[in-house]
Image (cartoon, rainbow, N blue to C red; front, side, top):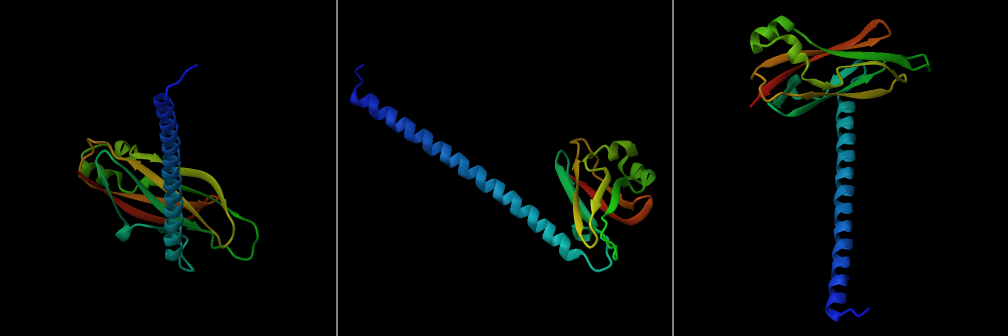
Length: 178
């Protein structure tokens, strides 16, 4: 097998470029993963700052307002804290996110309340999770707003149950923008 010097140089350069490309892609993905992890920890830290001694449920939204664009995804983060004392047993909790005023939402937006509720893509409810006394857990409700969604303001309510007893409730408004 005879290979010219030019062919050998091209092969060496091609292998070098391939290796450099793989290293570059790896470093980009590693940096992106690190940034997402840091962002998650910072959101958890901000939610922890919002907890006071007596608050069981907090939302990380300025003025309880979430602004989402038509055709986009939007996430609402919230934290639940187990305020029980005097026990080492974790509490069993559940939560549900519902439309706070279905009739008002239909009047404001001009669509059925079930269509608005269908904007919730993930996290509408969780039936059972445990939180140790004095500890917090973090949840996320993710919305996918259709491109043809009306430009309106609707209110959602988060209700947290401990067993069959209402533990905490809060609300947030979702403003659809173009």
